Length: 159
Image 1 (cartoon, rainbow, N blue to C red):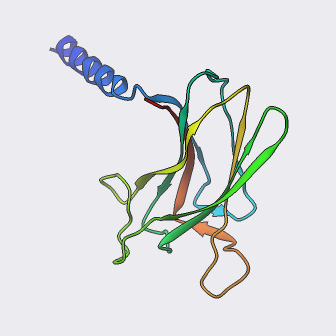
Image 2 (cartoon, rainbow, N blue to C red):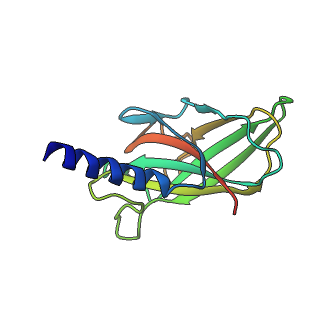
């Protein structure tokens, strides 16, 4: 009976992992219970096929402690030559009634946020992500952004 159950579990695991054929890179880093405004989450990307195009995503795991409707991020891609392209991004994280968007069955939600499409890579790149959330009417950023638990970066091969 144990061998049969182990075989079924192995089959289910194989099916789950084989469904994600577009994934080239997918990594998360924990920011603890709150993401500090000066904390930069960095990813060293693998060398990718320079003849192919890729779609890039920022992945966020958040919970019911996240107090805002939107999320503002500063994302920088550092090229092999040292040139850095910086983007300021805004994403909606909650519905008007305050319900968190994203996938998940518990109070932790995972959001896959589009960043760039049709990107070609030549060499080894780095990505740096920083939160830039501010309260309405206030200039200084939120010192410790509660409710964000993990920040990820994902690369998918374009069809």
